[in-house]
Image 1 (spheres, rainbow, N blue to C red):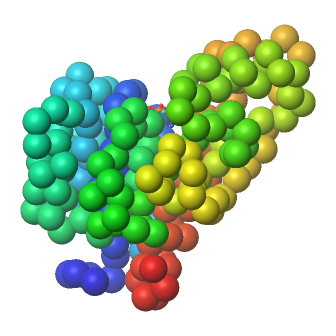
Image 2 (image 1 turned 180 degrees about the vertical axis):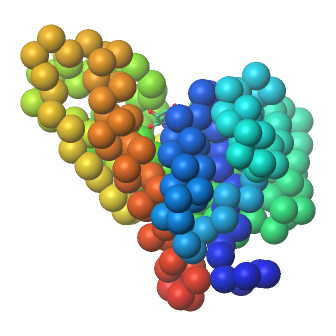
Length: 201
Ligand code: GRF
């Protein structure tokens, strides 16, 4: 552990960052006593999430994929003394060396009840379209530990959301975010951070 008794967390983002916002809000309202959101890493400079980070006074960095991706990620993570990673709508595959470095300390949010609608190719609206096409009555979101495989790894928290008549992929995506993702991502982040503080991870 470094500095105080809070774990220094980096959040990886590619898009608008509503899940990042849920984390920033949870932190602001004292719901993340074991975690400090210390850094936001985007894979592109126009990720809206970077503006959310700036508004909250959190350092943002852009690390675009390409040459020396692993080395550049490693450098920014270690220069900010990051101890835990949260993938919150991050579309790149994390290099294996980074997954190994944060074994058991890197989590991801996925918008389905894994293992359903998970794995390569299942992301964004495709997930919700799949749920509707297969006539599922319920869907939801999952936070899991990141391993070398997409959407694999032990599940930490899941929350289910009913599918309603007349749902579209867009309406389902929105409800899954509001009712499930924004609830379980802060909760799982705190849970894992508290376990790190307690020396259990
Ligand atoms: C969320 O649906 C998350 O589950 C998935 O990517 C989306 C990111 O949305 N991994 P946002 O950028 O947090 O709004």
